[in-house]
Image (cartoon, rainbow, N blue to C red; front, side, top):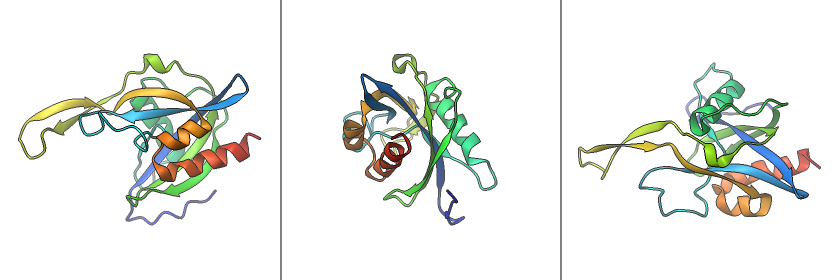
Length: 160
């Protein structure tokens, strides 16, 4: 699906890793690390994704970001485009579905510096992702950033 992203807006690319277990379609979601997200659950989860620069191949960026956030590359397989959504923040997220498996208990996320508490001058190192979990589609819709739920709708159509 073609991208209609204006150049001035932040763009992210991500992978919707999915599998079927016991006849149920599941997706792998990630929870952001750090003190700002520690007690947040519903609406806080995301697909593994990250920003990419103008001119950068978005699928390659999605693969890179997946590996940075989870510590391993996405499984081999066909990457099927799910298109693009716009989050409330204004960020555009373009995603691909890949069927495969990953042991969510073995993730090792990259880390980021964070000034904490804000404006304190004190810096801490936090994981970009503090955990990953497999969810059925209905549970995933509750956990996900609301705009990303549209990606699950598209995945359902794609995998019927």
